[in-house]
Image (cartoon, rainbow, N blue to C red; front, side):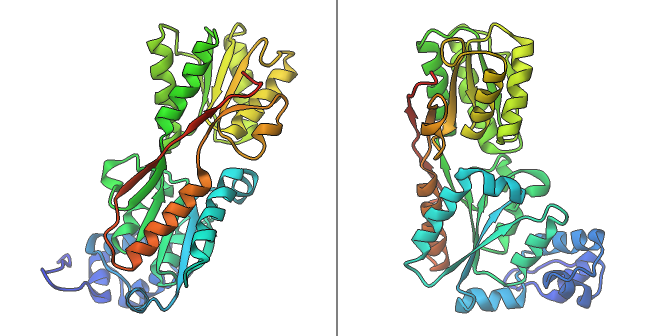
Length: 339
């Protein structure tokens, strides 16, 4: 018989074991992050934990006493991308400066590319009091289901409404991308392309939608779309594809500054002058934007403020306070020589 929790009854390790069809010892090994459990068994146990809303005893004691005094900042990306993209450094800085005035220590967790479930096992093992999740994906890289067992604050809205149980801090991605597209339209560009971000992430989806709505609304074709993964290399590759598809294009919006840098490189490689031949606009206003050649027009997002606000929300959640479920921070178009 499948284990279920009666009203007022706290789920137990034994109930998780019964629901998953494994032994109590196996559940304990999964909760404590042991590598000696097969992936299919780990998946079954984690599903049972989520279904029963089970909080491991060690985690429950930590949450009650604040014994760990630790907060995790999770980045479900490769280590190479985390350390290459200035966006992450700004978010971490904002969170760290905010937590410096508290008793909490910030632990940076980069999701393992070989074993993504390692991070989940660590979190469910009672090693931290709560977590901040930056660069959230859907699918295998989603941490949303953990919000039923651990206080979480996400940087970015969830794509799936069913994953909306945690608190979020986001920027107005759609409005920012619309401002970028409108700038290209207002400066006379008529064949405008975009290098969109991953479509399993809210910024990728929202920025593409904001761009397309303005370009289509201006009566222009919005069919020139290529996709990148927010890295400079992917931006350069996408720009080459766009030039091959539409040599006459005269404007490009890249969904982040790193991809915009890659686009600038590919345009120079193709002998195109920026902005005389092609205007380029990015998104982030990271620390490289102002010193790019030419300096990059971009949409400034308050990355450090995002990290700070995420940390403030989580500290208030851990203190048992009521916290606004969603916070949206404004963006600002910064015009420079690339457009």
